[in-house]
Length: 80
Image: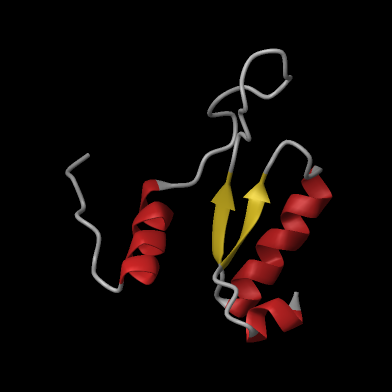
């Protein structure tokens, strides 16, 4: 991960069904230590899979930060 951070890694997928609780804790700690974004994903690719759409999500604030970093301009923040 250190080499990827040096190459510009911006975040890690902490919340994913394949990450056990201890793995999530480790990834979250690494992200916090290095100032990385913490994301989540349901990895839903259609029916017939155990993944539940939306079971692991990325916060709206983190999505806005991803857009900010990717576009170079601040994202539009809609009222909740």
